Image (cartoon, rainbow, N blue to C red; front, side):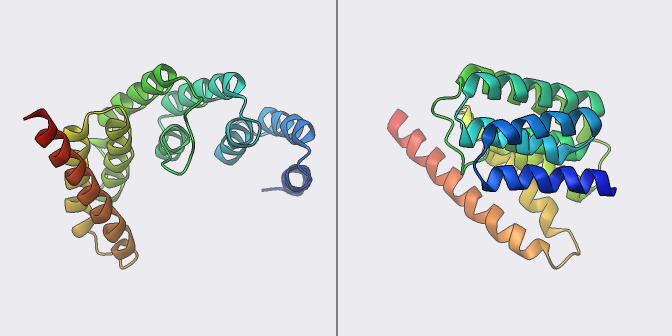
Length: 189
């Protein structure tokens, strides 16, 4: 990043720390117009609209643009970033229109499925994990469990030591999803 870009980021963070949301959003808009390839700025913009301002209408518009750009760019980072914005378990989506999230998640998942065929094991695991959260959220836990199982299998085959922490988190979530599915199956009997 050049000095002008770093200066802009510094001003954005100063506005965020001061909770001056109007200035932060204005600077983010400027930043996105100057640096349209900055995934970081799009994520930060969406975070402020949804988490800080709880402006679901503007947040939804921003996320639609984010999803469209992610699909157009065919970029793993953008696709995973958009999916994370829509299906992060630490975020409260209770006021966000569920149909909008479902539609955007479906479009992202379909695109990811097409792309991941040509990816390495690590990238396929990241795609499957992101899609698993989506399918779990929309109530298709069977597919979510299958995707998590494929993710675990792929991660177990990776040679990188850092993947041990990832594998532990995956196995924990997989166990939760399987338990959820067992309880659901028992209730249907």
